[in-house]
Image (cartoon, rainbow, N blue to C red):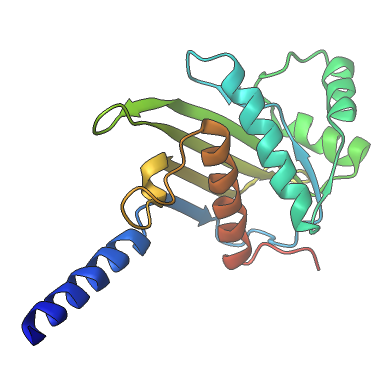
Length: 197
């Protein structure tokens, strides 16, 4: 009897540890010598490399929301960014060159420009009728004064990566998955030394 209880306790412990393990593919590289004192931020419209038209806008809005919730950053309004693109005769999604970034730094008074990209998004079928979303994001953060790359982040997850035990914790919506991934990315940036001093 004692062996059965010990066996079930060990099994429960293993399942708990497996559910809490670090499954995510989050990688952030901060460039050598990069200034990590970031206060004012421009978030460019997200690029969409998927076939789903709405996913980039959804991801951009949820990421913006998470940035604002930290209270650490001053985020330049999307309308001001749109006016800058109009004055520079740039289309949204156009490649920005160093002169564009330095112009943006002087006109909008920003420290960095964040360029986000939705690389892949969709859903996969798991056991039975369960479908879970997956999402892959990439970010480049540029110093607005110099045009130099400050950091690069790549992150990908599936909704069932958040499984705690059995089916608990599974993210079943793309918006929920995006929100959690955005939190993880921003938290990783803070852990790597990105702050507003």
